[in-house]
Image 1 (cartoon, rainbow over the protein chains, first blue to last red):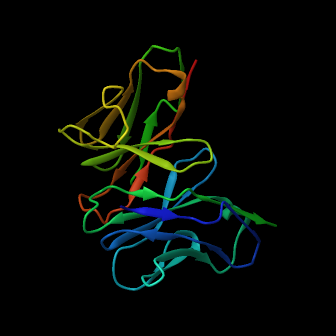
Image 2: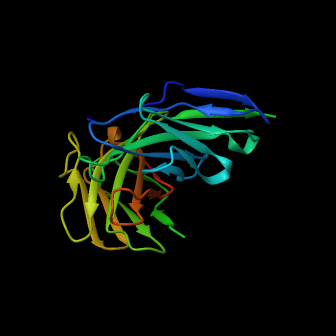
Length: 115
Length: 117
């Protein structure tokens, strides 16, 4: 069965500092991994995905994530946080080999960036 | 590109009535659409996967007779909550995949807030 864990309900960082939002996953096959962001009163927006190839994936708004197979992690990172990055972030996984389109989302991590 | 709309954005209905929520892919054709339910401060719960022209695949625990899904065209899927009750009050979100393969990301509608009184 697929599962996703986002161990932090909330992450607080100061503007200009690097940020990390953690995600670990569990699938029986190989994973497709995704990060989405949800701004207040807006729908989820796609940030980036890992399908295959380079473990470091770059996405929208300066975000990047690193796929670590041994640690089954896909942490989201940004070198310098902006106040406008404050939002709710969801990690998601699909099982490439057995899961079809079914996507499992983590519980979400709320990011607060303080000016 | 890849815009998904939902209508209505919010709806209030009386217990026992039915409510229809529309999900449209505005600038692409969506073979597969998904319906989610999001509870406050919780993640998205997949309700069903809808393929154009065929019956939806419901997740375990989701009543197919209560949550009717129709995917009549490549740009429109509808969710009808039948005989709604207060416990059906929630935030319903639809999404669509840009392509037919499972490596494609999803594009989400803005959601519909349903309140059943």
